Structure formats: structure tokens, C-alpha cells
Length: 60
Length: 488
Image (cartoon, rainbow over all chains, first blue to last red; front, top):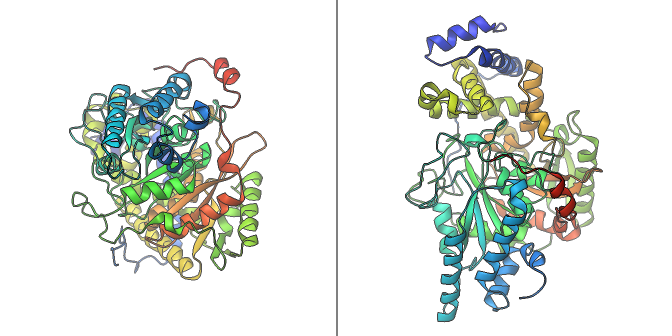
């Protein structure tokens, strides 16, 4: 996914009905791009067949 | 009464209960000792959001009356405790550290609070936390919590007040809630013991949620024995929390044998020797490994290569779960959130679903690596955090680059959050101090529902060292007097 620009983030916020002040916009853009960058290496893992169970079943 | 009031305040809960049982100390005297310390120190430390002096004294009088009548006393009879202001206590507001819930008075006790009271514990009050148990709050509505070892430093979060109040003996024991390290972080930075139990071991009923799939209430105490004692009281099935386990609760104190001979301990190389771990923290953790080796444990390196990514994976998942919970207020009352909380929730609200699902799959792989390592090792060992407590000012500024996000949020969380993702237990115990006098935390993690082994190893380590016996506020007169009271 390419780097997000502030205008992209504002559009996403408007589309989802979230309030976004100009002051918030810059920081939220940095935070979103940091997530995308940090999680990008996951693409190199063979994740397609991993079952994404969020929790462990309690099996005594 | 035996010893000075301050000496009594720093006693273990197990010791206090024994003093009370033998009538060397009355519950009313003990509550007054803690109320006096709260009065003396909390104007600056800001551990408490709400103190309940009248209710606590009344409960102490009832505890005295019960003793006069005779009969069996609970395992925490007369012992004053405090809880993070994320737990409901009947008749007391549960603010969750927010302005939005300032007046939200609870109609009943959280299960954990009810169990502590049923065991004879006396609720002193509710403790400060980062807003809504998310980290990174810049403007605390109920005052800036401060580290008792150095008031200019961060006590850790989100259970900030729990770490402070326990370390500074403003209560005998406290409760925190750990989603991604919120018990273990404050425990490490304030120099006390804190456990994140196996997910489902302790009921979440009456605890304001952050992440349904990772929230885990756990105690903070001034020693491992007290941690085991409190866990024996609060753990176990609760019909009001559907994910709470039906497994029988062991007698955790029975595990404190002092014997670690033959225990296999894996030292996680990525977290101990990684570039983000400070040299002082690395030395302290390696020295702890040497101590355990001398007592017969088998300590060897283990590699878990996905762990450095755990912080980002954790935040993508936990924040997304949290943002769903907050959406209504985020839309209708955005100005009532702290700036950093609002921006964190807005970010999570906009994360693409494809990224969320990829993080969910990565979570499964991280869990697999941890469980595989637990097949070969009884305990996994690492620092609880890569550094000791940073200055408060370091976390107060706005984010101005994406690199700063990684440094301030993802890196630190990669030390504690792997076990949140895996749903496995992890205990933090003090393992040293930096040259500037700040505590360092040692993290011991283990198999699901095997808290006993963590207590066994942590307790044995504690018996061989004196880190947990050190007290903050020793030069309190000067230090606290130099510091202006925090805003209310």
C-alpha cells in the first residue's frame, strides 16, 4: 500500500463519518503510515493459510 | 503495633494479615496508616483518582468486629487494597481516567473487587490510569501520575496508579488490567511484581474493556508471594464472564518452594540482545539469568524471530477493537478525549480491513512461536521493557513523524505484548536499578494456565536478591517538597 497523504486521510475520515480537525490530521497521517510501514514485512510471510483465531480455546 | 508506621505500610500483605490475625495490628490502625501516607504523598504522585476514607474505615471496623466474634478469617482479612479506576466498585465512579465517564457511578462491584472483599480485603480507593486504559495520554484529567523513584519520570501505563501506589506503599496490594503490558509495564518501571494471567484465568466482569480478546486483570504487589496470594483469591470461573475458564485454581503459594533446579529457561535473544534494549537493562537481565543458573535452572538462548514485530501487530488489533467500542463518543464528543487518545482511536478506525486481517494472522504465528518455545522451555525470560522509565516530558509532545510512532509505541510494546497476543501468562519482577536509580523489570513468561511455575521462579529469584526490598521516597521530604503539586 502506498504512503497515505493528509488529503487521503481526510477523505477516509469524511467517508466514515469521523471528525478530523486540521491539528489531528497531521498526526493521524503519521500514525497510519507508521502502521502500514511496520506491518508491510508481514507480506513476506506465508500467512494465507494461517487461521486467524483471535483467542485460544480453553482446553483443560 | 509493631515497628514504625512506614515499616508497617511496606510489609507484605501476607505479613499484614498475620499481624492482624495475631492482634498485633488492628485493621483500623492499618487503614489509617495508608490514608496518612496517601495524604502525605499523593498530592504529588497522583496515584489515586478517588479515595474512600469513610468506607474504608467503616469496613475496617467491621473487620475488627468480625475478629471479636471469632470464626474463620479470609486470606486478606483487614488488608487494604486499591484498584485501577477501570474496575467497578459499587457506589464509586468508574472514570476509566476519562472526562467522559467522570460521573459514571457503578451499581455493583466488578467480580475481582467482590472476591477481594469477600476474602476480607478493604477497598481504599480507585487508581489513576491513562485515559480509557490506552497508553500515551498527554493531559491526565485527574493529575499527572509520577514515578515514585523519580517524580520527573513516567510510572508506566496504563495501570499507572497501581504501580505507584504499590511501590510507594499507598496500599498493601493493588489491581491493574493488562491488555498489552499495562500491569507489567508499571510494575517494571515502579519496581514491583505484576502478573498478566492467562487470558480467561481472571474474570473481566465489571472491568471497562479495551480489547475483548486480550484484556486480563492482574495484581501488582511488593513481592511474588503476595501476587500468588491475590491470584488465589481472584482467579476462577465467573458465570458473568463467558470466557473465564472452568479449570480449577491451584494453590499458587504452594508453588513457592524456592527450588528451581532443573527448570528450563529460555532467554529470548531478540529481546535481551536486540538493538533496542538498553545496555543497563541487558546486563540486569543477563545477571538474573546467572542467578537462576546458580540455583540449578538450565538457562539457554532461544530465538523467537517474530517478536520484534509484535508491538505493531498488537496495536493494530487492540486499537481496532477499542476504536469500535469508542466510535459513538468519538463522533459525538471528540473534544472530551485527550488529544493523544482521540488521535490513536481515529487512526485505528481508519486502518484497512486487509491490514487488520494480516495482523490477525501474524498474531496466530507469534502465538505458535511462543507455544513451540514453551514445549522446550518451562519459562521464557526477557526484559519487561527495553529501558527503564523515561522522562514524562518525552511522551508529552505531539507526534511529528512516522519514525517517532514506531519508537514511542511499537518498539516498547514488542517486549510485553507477545504474551497478550498469545493469551499466555507473564510475570514482571524487579531485577535491578539503573545508575540513575530507576527500577528494571525482568519478565518471566510461561505456558497457558501455568502461573504457578512463573511464581516459583520469580519467588526463588526474589529470595536470592534484594531488589524488591528497596523503597522509593527515601529522600521524600526534599524531593517531594521541591516539586509543585500537580494540577487536579
